Image (cartoon, rainbow, N blue to C red; front, side):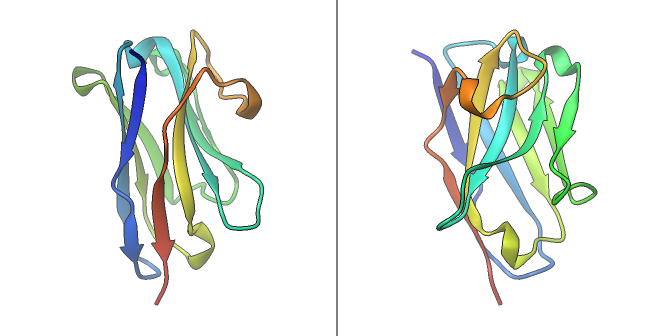
Amino acid sequence: QVQLVESGGGLVQPGDSLRLSCAASGFTSRSYAIGWFRQAPGKERERVSCIGRSDTSTYYADSVKGRFTISRDDAKNTVYLQMNSLKPEDTAVYYCAAKLFSISCPDRAMDYWGKGTLVTVSS
């Protein structure tokens, strides 16, 4: 059974850091592009970052470039999103999603989705 489980969200202050994890089971994550998406209250879902299959490529939204880093640990079948210098506008539910044999993460064509983890940035 294919499953993606996000963890690592929480309440932090502006300027703090968090590391989100996306643990994959039922498939080898390296064969998939894994993306991080977020949705804030009242806003559309936004693609934040993506790592292509076999780490062929990475993508970052302009709003997070230089602050967020995506990485993959094949031994743990897990993809991480290191988030530094967090801002209140980063507050959202963060989802990871997977697309088989892809180097990109098209928002409306991902194969599998996790249930999300909430990140709240507030003083």
